[in-house]
Length: 229
Ligand SMILES: NC(=O)c1ccc[n+]([C@@H]2O[C@H](COP(=O)([O-])OP(=O)(O)OC[C@H]3O[C@@H](n4cnc5c(N)ncnc54)[C@H](OP(=O)(O)O)[C@@H]3O)[C@@H](O)[C@H]2O)c1
Image (cartoon, rainbow, N blue to C red):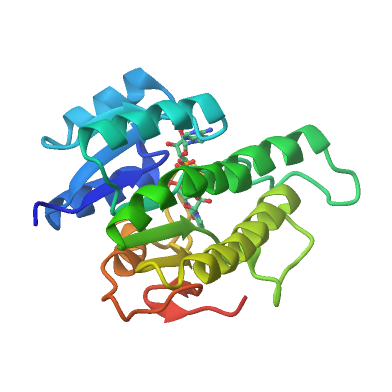
């Protein structure tokens, strides 16, 4: 068959951009998406062969437009990487929250991936094949959850729960849905003190993309190793 079609959200910079680069290198047809068209086009120019399409994951209309494009251009989607996220809210106290920030985080970090999955799972089901990677974080682990970064941590914990539910719902459809933590990575979000490069962070994601058909679904992984919820 022709190359697998892979779509990455929030891919104009950081881990999303590097994930596109590694997917391209691995032979996928890559759709790089970005909420800012200029930034997205500029990023795509650095990766000859990738396609750019605008996408704001907080906008149902933007998701619908993208779905129409993918359905008419390819008739399928094989790999969906829900990477876009906001508000690593280090300055915020859970006891005195700015609930607007919390709401924005829910809209982008949870409802964004959820809407994307609802839009694209039907295209994967048609082919009885798919890989979905929800880019999560150790901050969403319940077993070692602290009080810090409440909006971010709670939305990533909810994304993990969504991952389990989607995996259960698609278990017979040839679709594997997993949550992946890229580790603490040097990006605008991770900051310059982070120990890991974007190369390592994206490699953690590629592992879940390249799983064999009998690979795990509904799990939480970093570097191919299972994490505790
Ligand atoms: N860096 C870390 O240490 C670390 C650790 C654990 C997990 N993660 C996760 O890894 C993923 C990527 O993180 P990163 O460090 O690469 O973050 P980043 O450098 O802050 O990049 C975030 C990307 O998401 C995009 N984005 C934000 N809101 C969006 C929306 N509504 N629609 C579409 N795109 C949107 C941003 O676009 P703009 O350029 O337009 O803002 C940007 O491209 C996130 O899910 C993050 O939670 C990161």
